[in-house]
Image 1 (cartoon, rainbow, N blue to C red):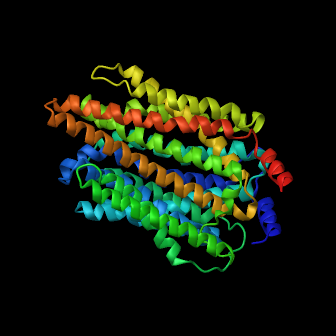
Image 2: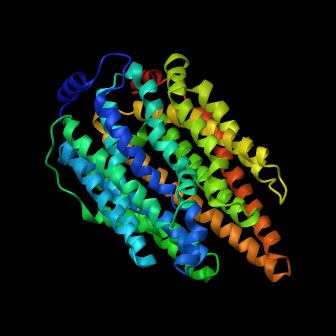
Image 3: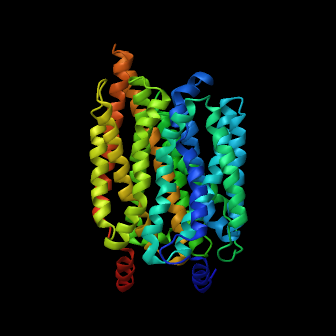
Length: 485
């Protein structure tokens, strides 16, 4: 698609100034539903361990495999979205998600449930870049902050609300109800979307490099799987798997650089030449690593240590998720008016303070303190994500929007999976060591969780550093980079 065609499509698809285009509203609604499933299994882990007779590490793969599948599939979406129409991309994404959800409802074993989650994730992987790429095409730059604030509801609030939603649903039935409740909602959204969605731009024919697909999947998957093997396994084997993953990623990068010279990369790494985009990429990856790690730990602490029910756990974390969603549009308007630094720097500091507070969890910490720390974390993430997404993608030229979105979404999922595996490994290793030394099981688990929260707090420190490096607005970035050439 040429830049002229892109501008023409944007003008025709953009609604009246001050209103979110209908195509974006449709995609946000669909994306919210599919991303909600990324973390909906967190509260169900204790229930699944008993129902399917599996360990905590095995159950965790229902969330980790979801994120890893997205990380493996998202690199393909840059090519896929250029090759097919908007409607076909939407139909493919929602069709895969519906099939995976239906399979999960009737899954007779852990293996089938894991396969269902992988199919669900394949559909979700298409929705995220589809939403971001379409937004950058149809929304004028002056209104992107406001619209991106609404998009935050899908990208950030959905995974934050997953534990709360699952806690409420589990109160009324088994883990299968998590999928049975989502299935009809997703079906209605799919039907309405196909009726109303219009195509944006023109498809382009291009080939796909399967070596790039294989090396990306093997590299990112190897990193997280290798990390998960450190606990309760042979350390030498774990190190070998991590090393193999890093080698595969190196091959993937070299392959992309070679394909760029021929104009057909699976993932165009020239986006990384834009400093603001690269800084935003680092910030988002580390923030998601810290966020998902804490979201895994808090339900485990509340249910396994404090012995709350899934419903009570869901109600305790719900205010933070709701605050994050309600603040999204406001954050977008503040960004449009004042720029990103007034939001990102306080947000990054808030993330660190919240995670530092969670390192002090005890057997008797008041629930209002836990609620307050979780709410602070969610509000701080809301203040961070919208400006970072907007500044990062706004710093790359239009022809690289789809690649920039794919890279951002890929590393976001890899970082989330990496953070999840890291905190579970640290928590379990510390707890097992204390149990072997004679400590009581509950106290050993609590100390393991505290150490894992410390890891999350340490991970958040680079977020503060990178936040300072971000500019206030994307337009000033483009002007500076152009003048520097």
